[in-house]
Length: 510
Image 1 (cartoon, rainbow, N blue to C red):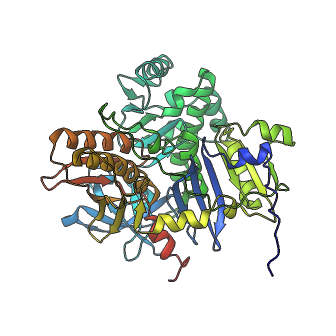
Image 2: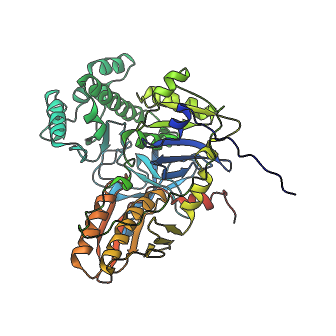
Image 3: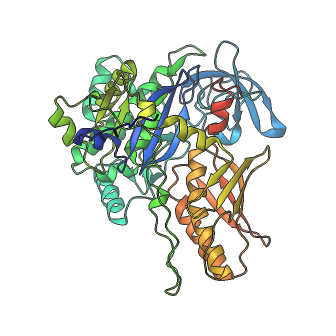
């Protein structure tokens, strides 16, 4: 005998809980997954980027006084020791103006030379860590680097903003003829120069290397000149102090430690780099006679509905204040790690970051469950990626390159083959642009789109893909389409691919 079960009452989400699930403005999550800290960027309910912090803190960004152990002329490189017997690879292409401490630079780097080096890549498998002699320091607004005295501006700055910044820097006698003036008097504020002199620093004894300036996109967002100069002088004083300390520190000293693991990720999130969603880019207009693509019902979310008793605390006190900061379209940083929350809070305070920061606490519903992190990561690691139209991609990394195959799959529409193939390829191009970022694919990428005979359709596809990849924070270039219909893409290598981070770090043993 069956018994009748009454339906459960639906859970009504509060305003605060609804805003917590809203990812239109972008949510940067710091949490743990299978015992390892990870960072995930979710926007428009899509996982855009993901990375796992290494078990051992990396050294990328750290500055050392290294010693050249041996040079290898046939590959134009040398090996530099940075301490504890650790040798690093230094390409002479990354040593255009080395800062030697034991002698004057005469165009050569010799064995036994002591010089400043900065780690740009950690050791991986059998490869040694890589360093550069062109030291660079940066904040959200400016970047200083050795090697060239030129002043450059972000390509994302509008011509008007670029001209206004150039005029401001010129009037303050910081740049001249498109170059940064190579003088402590020019790049340091009077207050900073006096403070350094009071501490016993003799700036007249400091030898400045050729230094260039890059004005970043965020500098154009500042409304007051006082804020601009505050960030500029903060960076230049840090750079000058580092160079001065190098004159009196012993070999193998670490002059600047690597930033915390979350810092680069947070900096990119704040600056907006890599945040723009390729899914937002409009498709090229189809012909008027073309019927609309068949709509599919959205897949149900695998995340459970949040409990009405969820508790969160953040930089804002009180439920009313917290809720007001969760309007649609606003960025937010969320973590469920109390120690990490304090570190991020301190970092935001020191760097003037005013993005809302929330400490998530709920014993009934974890942050991972709330945002379906397990299912999202599982999908990001699968070789097959389904498209809304019923088509799919097959992504297969190899030693030499990454191959991406586009298939029509279950796509079915009553239209000409030409329109069908173009429609699938355009949708696939959007997904390819996202997957490059999400999986952190680099090197040579070959995409086998569905073959199109029309030259106009090929050009439409290439132009669209190029527009999408320009939104990637990592340098990505769409080369061309071969006679066989294969699209060639190159993407700069910044870090390990997501799959390598996940499987080769003990997170999964299957």
